[in-house]
Image (cartoon, rainbow, N blue to C red; front, side, top):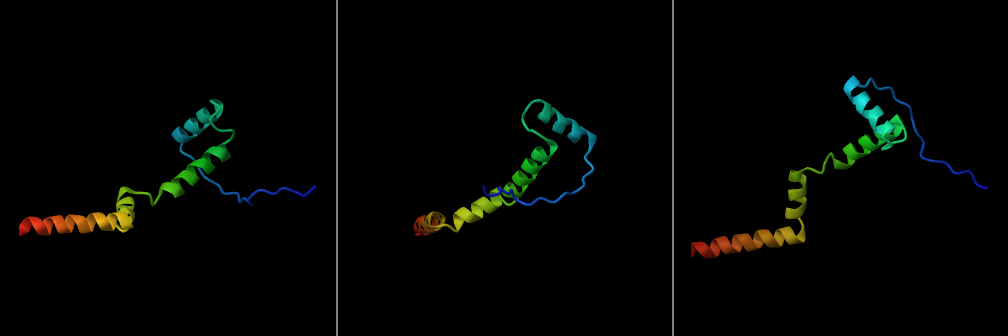
Length: 84
C-alpha cells in the first residue's frame, strides 16, 4: 500500500495570554476541537481567509464587475437625465 502523507508542518512557539488559553481549553473540553493545534490552525485559516474580505474590498470587487459597471452607468445616465 502507498504511504499517505499529509501536508508538511513546522513547529512554532507561541506564548498565549491566559484568558485565551482558558477559552482554548474550554473549546477542547466541550468537544468543539480535538487539540490546541486544531483550534489554532482553524483560527489562523479563518483569519487569513477573511483578512482581505472587508466591506471596502467587497464593494470594490462588485463595482468593477460587469453588474457593478452597469449599475454605475445607469446611475450616471439617470443623474444626467434629471439635470436636463
